[in-house]
Image (cartoon, rainbow over all chains, first blue to last red; front, top):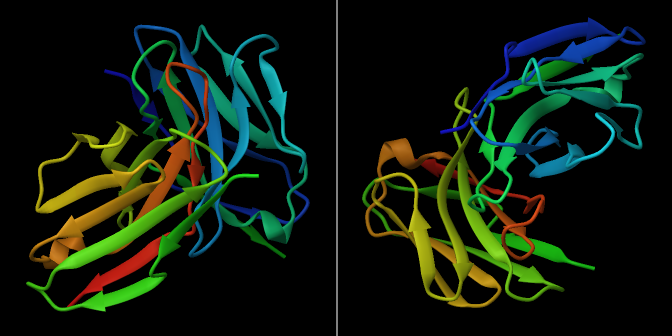
Amino acid sequence: AQSVTQLDSQVPVFEEAPVELRCNYSSSVSVYLFWYVQYPNQGLQLLLKYLSGSTLVKSINGFEAEFNKSQTSFHLRKPSVHISDTAEYFCAVKLQGGSEKLVFGKGTKLTVNP
Amino acid sequence: SQTIHQWPATLVQPVGSPLSLECTVEGTSNPNLYWYRQAAGRGLQLLFYSVGIGQISSEVPQNLSASRPQDRQFILSSKKLLLSDSGFYLCAWSEGSGGAYEQFFGPGTRLTVL
């Protein structure tokens, strides 16, 4: 069965600093990969996704993630964070041609301090 | 465009009371539907998912049940709530089957069992 590991449960950074949120997965077959963001007391919103093609995917608000098949990773990065990026971030995988389920990591709480 | 609704937004219930949470989706047909629970520090736990009317898959044995009486309606129920049922309940939908379809989440219901 596939699994997702988010290595850091909490990441505090200062405003305008770079950040990397780590995500590793295990699966015996190819997967689709997703990052979701959750603001306090809200549902999850899709931030970006990797389906195929270019291994570097970008969101409209400056985040990017790179699929590394050999390291089974999909780390999320932003070169300069804002206070408004404070939220919880979830990495998720879906088996290609498999069930309709997403498997989520336990989340990383990003806190951006002034 | 598609929208997903959940109600109520918050709920406080005594132990042993029944529960009914409702989720509806607009703007799409035959969606896959999902119920998740999010408890503090435990990430997202998939409870049930449905690929069609009357078709429910249960992921975790518990005192909760789900039903899909209409194509775009998904209901989460319990006959007798436990303290451990407290949490943030999220409904989600996705397109079709077998594809690289991301899930879209509702705003959630905060349930407190006292």
